[in-house]
Image (cartoon, rainbow, N blue to C red; front, side, top):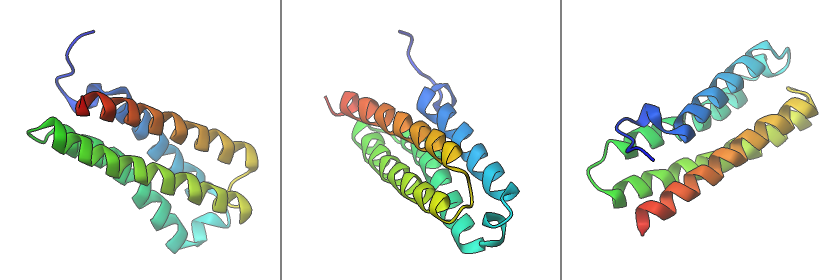
Length: 121
């Protein structure tokens, strides 16, 4: 395996970028969700937090600092998943879409955990 030189090369960052794009597009196109500014802002902020904490942590000077930022990113993953349940309950997005997006968030969370464990060894 080659050494990762940029955060853009991390699969977890790339997958999060896709999730952020999906969060924006699905809620902007939702008739009800697009009008609930507070909800939209919260889930979008949480999704962006995943992506940015991965990037910021990568740019830190130690593995310990990077792992700490990954912890924050993982917590934001949980927040996005939780909000996706609410989006489904409020009929902002359909059940299938919500489930698919939650699965993406779970996969990202698993990847974050794996990298975090590696950094802490």
